[in-house]
Image 1 (cartoon, rainbow, N blue to C red):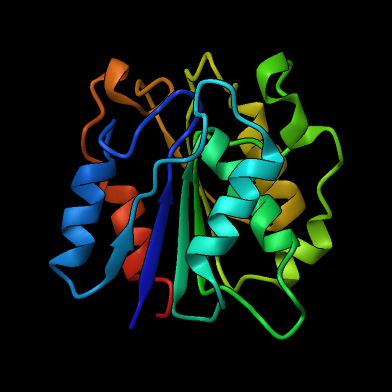
Image 2: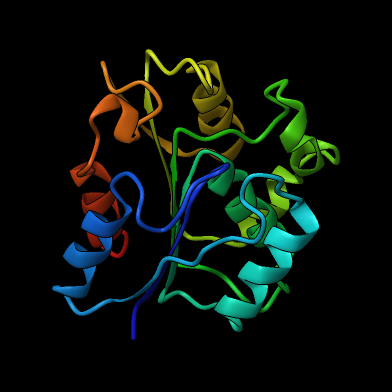
Length: 184
């Protein structure tokens, strides 16, 4: 069974943005989809978020896919960084994401320790980053860092800001297509 875990961002819920749409689209195609409420979303800590995701996912394999939005992206990357060498995810989609400090103090615990990019690359088959050039919360240069350091495929969008509901984004076909084509 192909499993997808959609990890929301800072101060968000599983019902926000394009998450319900993506869940429905994937379930209609036979995926098992979990969109968890991450602990204390308004005051997040890496330790709590990482532990929660690890408990939900359990053993990771090539039929395990992760989708993260904003803070959910670094959470997914930190999760991949902790995988044992005998486990490898099928793919990760990083939407409006970052892998380094974005100078927003409530999220500092997530970037305090630098990401081991090599370990992340070794822990996942496919990496796709989706970012809008006009994102004010997480500037586009963070997508370029992910592209460069993780050899990610970068899908550049225009006019969608932080790719969330406040920018009118309730569907994200680019994320759906990325997951559907991971094993092509």
